[in-house]
Image (cartoon, rainbow, N blue to C red; front, side, top):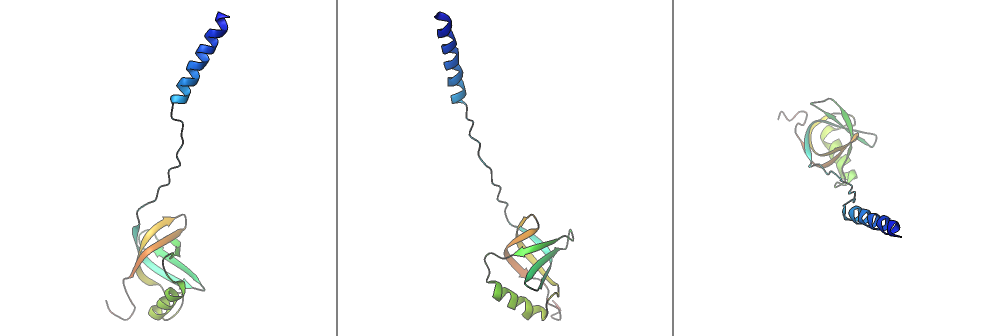
Length: 114
């Protein structure tokens, strides 16, 4: 009988030790601060693309805080046609092949000389 009590005691100590350990696994979601990207914004047939000046990579653009109809009207008013690259500065987060834009600035308009 003493042998069983020792086993139970060791087992209880083991359980107490395991239960005192913190095994909680927390999923860490890294939300990057927005970064600035300089390059060319291209719009055509309902698709917005950005070509980064530094890396020459192309990413789809998403504008979660903008009215897309107004944004398309702005692009066409400035460029006067689809697929004409507009120099711009995009501020946002790059996720896979998509740049989620939080703010943007048009840096050069053809014919304005600035």
